[in-house]
Length: 327
Image 1: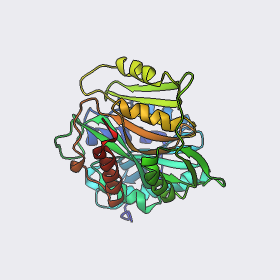
Image 2 (image 1 turned 90 degrees about the vertical axis):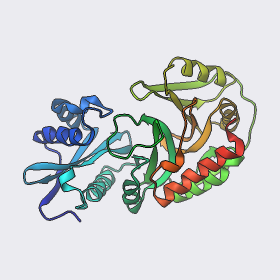
Image 3 (image 1 turned 45 degrees about the horizontal axis):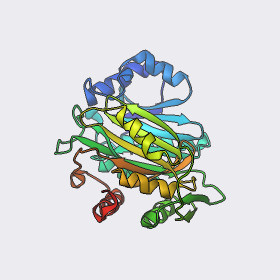
């Protein structure tokens, strides 16, 4: 529990400067969302209603912060920071709990959190609240400029995606998964208490693909969303990859598993250098498999600091990769 002199509460407009101070103390000038250094932006963001900031106050100072971003019927927990003078008081677990309680009051379907792969304590605290690790979102961030963990040989690092399904569906979702990943799907969906009817059928790709992409040029990471796979899948993915050429550029694919051609699409992507890293349920309204292409960037997965459950997922991903799923 938080110490008696720490008050946990919702954000007030006058707290914005205190939130900026939290970010500066943790990240210096390197936080990946530079607009968060502007107090006026944080006030506007909160007033817009899609982001809720939760704060911990001590002696008139913002001691900790947490953001809850809402997109349709799902929420994402992010920007969790405790100032150094207040660490060890159990503040962040209490803010996590308040975020879950608020999500339930808002009748959100699920909560997501991307935990840095070097923060096993964060993973453990979230798991205690019902979150389960479902994917390694590989090489999303450059390690340069990150101050919250020790440096190692990784030039880029992943997040561990943790998911808490708050409102389970009454009917199972139907997903198409390659046979080699069926066991992983059964394990992860069971941990989420989310029923899934799994098919491993594989046909031939026909027609045109429906894709979208998001680019984080600051972190040199491309996210490709395969909503529907067609015969042109390889060509379309290569076009997106070529549009972003830089040192340490990497790519993640989010493959829609409701698409009956998902298994055939997986085989195409595997031949292109992508490998399985987990599942992202309810991603943009779709059940998705996550695949990663390191594009030559080395991955030292043994260096990550992971909870036992996240480490099991890491080992599963590494086993799939070592058995030759990636060329």
